[in-house]
Amino acid sequence: MKRIKTSEENKNVVALLTKKFEFKDDRNIGQIAIAYSLQMNKRFDLSSAIETDNNGKEYPETLLGNINGVSNDKVYHAILNQLYEKPLTEEEFQKLTKLHLDHGLGELNKRLLQNNKGKNAHIDFMLSIMNHGLSLLNNSSTSFKPTANLKDVDAYSKELKIEIGKDSKTKEPIVLAINNERDFDSQHIALAGMNGSGKTELVKDILFQLREQSEEKLNFIFFDYKGEGKSEKLKKFLTATKCEFIDIKEAPFVFNPLRNIPMNNERDKSFGIKAFKDTVASIDKRISIRQQTSLEVAIRECFNAANVIGKYPSLQDVYEQLEATYLQNNQNPDTLTAIMRELAGDIFADDFDPDYKVQDKSLYVNLPPTLGDTVRQATVFIILNYLLSEFISYNDVQTSAERIKPIRYVIVIDEAHAYLGNKNMAKVLENLLRMIRSKGVIIMLVSQGIEEYKQKDFDFSSQIKIPILLNIQNKDPKLAKSFLGTPKSEIALSNALKGLESTDDGEKHGVLNLKETKLFDINMFYKRM
Image 1 (cartoon, rainbow, N blue to C red):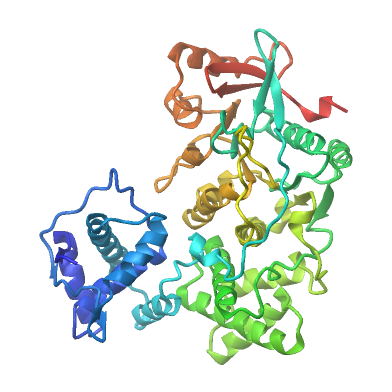
Image 2 (image 1 turned 135 degrees about the horizontal axis):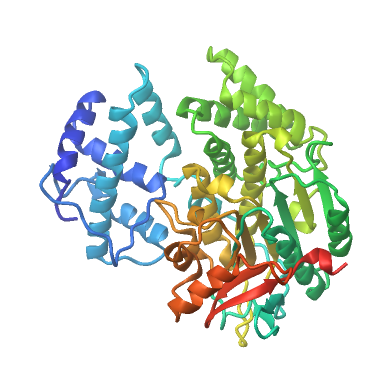
């Protein structure tokens, strides 16, 4: 590899970090910076990424090190090939190494120099990086690829057509062939609408149609963040879709979220434990690296014990082991122990059903506000972590000659704005959207507005090809275009946005922008029954 220079801004970072860790060779911090950037699952768009300046620290050709005189360049090249899912040219490899070097140095600078907390905080942080190696945490498909063959699991292979409403002018049905790739290269759906816009009833209607058309072969999970409860309207929906109602507040869920972690395959077990730990850590930014390490140690201890008795550990086992780990390390109870205590005691049952598989049922998971935001979010993301690892172990679905993509499952995340504003949780959702598409899984994100979909680090609209806009507070045309896609007619979009507020006809309205912008009367499930 050719010589690489850091940016001028990072020149001092190299010197300061090398001194801080008392490294004799300043290449060490460069290697750690690249590894950390990869662990964060940072991906650059080669077509648009702009390299920083080359006015900083110059590294020799041996920056990436060698073993017994053999350069590690090929190892890093293979890692980057896997991360970017393509064979990289030498020029691309050189460019990406430089980009990841500067990115990693910048992140280390922020984490260790600008926010230095505690005498040994930098040591704890560095140990966590070394402990993870280049597993890319839980943010890359690498972390979920099993060593065994992928499971060949059935999917519903016929065309699925859903009617979302009727054209407000012509009263003609608006029908979407959601798994026809001639129309949509991604099946993910986003709905935005404030309270009272009808979005929940539209979601129910879509799910009802999918269940009916697939002859109940296509299952779903609906995370109700508002905790609607078993109202009369909901009972009708549950009956019509043959859906199981899970009220977390009434009784613990008999499902064990650790069930997807292999007991007898060390590599996959390690990835599974890290993914679970990272999922819990993403819920609350106050969970430190040291706390995360304690959780990982506790889970590993539980699985070591489970190998002896041949029974999966429960979250209660993990919580008890975590307490023991804290006691051993002289750690006081904190945010992590509080979260794990509530998850283990109230959310997931200790006497779980070992054969319970979430994906084999249609479930409505009720999450009432009395549980608190942190626990509700943790519950959702722990189940999502389980589903992600399960579906990643399935073979990819194969689109037919008629361009019909088979579908296996639907995940509905209500009140998605509760997650999109959290950087760590948003990253989990981003990877869920990216990684699960090829497995025939549809993600439906339901939010109160459209601002939340375009985050600083990622535009969620880019992964969603079926955006549906209902009545919202902020009808800024620029935001609407970002969410719906650029319309053929600015006037048609403007008129449609104004039409969202009209209730003279007693209907709830939505806007769709496919071949053209349309204002339509949305389907409301309760009207069917």
